[in-house]
Amino acid sequence: MCCLFGIMDNSGSLTGKQKTRLIRALAAESEVRGTDAAGIAYNSGGRLQICKGPGPARKHRFFVPGDARVVMGHTRMTTQGDAKYPQNNHPFAGKVGRLHFALAHNGVLYNDKSLRKSKKLPQTHIQTDSYVAVQLLEQQGALTPDSLSEMAETVEGSFVFTVLDHKDRLYLVKGDNPLTIWHYPRLGLYIYASTLAILHQAVNRTWLAGEPF
Image (cartoon, rainbow, N blue to C red; front, side):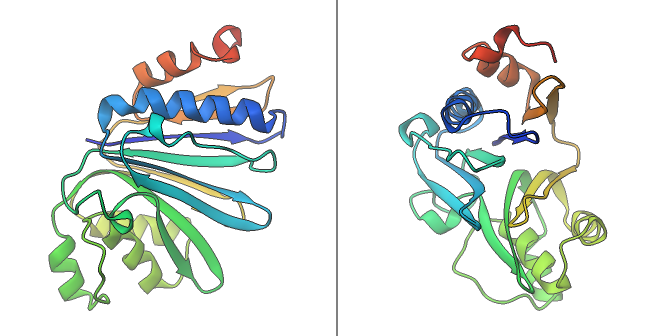
């Protein structure tokens, strides 16, 4: 059981300070679903940035720069792959052609080892079952709704995947695990988390508490 969370500031109405406060609130409330590691991904200065590491989210003190419009986050409860090694934690980095992306996963995949054999995927030092999703996308050589659908239909287990590319396109691929999205029309803002309770509690810690959604 892990947690996915994030924001999409489509209109650019939020300051860096507001986005940082919102992401920290979401990350802290997401600890209820995992405290082994945490990480976020966003685009800033023309590059995809991934910040992650072991330990509870609140200890990371995540910072979101003002030019980051989309932020994708993850808190982890370890099922496979020691969280003390950063490469085992989410989000994972991937690349298809010249397109860089970050992927995070909530759930457990059961056929990652068999897929690496049957699909002849490259050997990797990453021990986490989730990473096979990155490898499947890289093998297809594309990051599109079709390639994401094929990846999701190939893996077996429980999942929600979030994928952010360096062009600020965010994909949400929902299997049978929960995901809740709120839209704030006046602000042009979307926020999401794995459960409704996490969204409620996070928003109540910020200036969004009275904003209609």
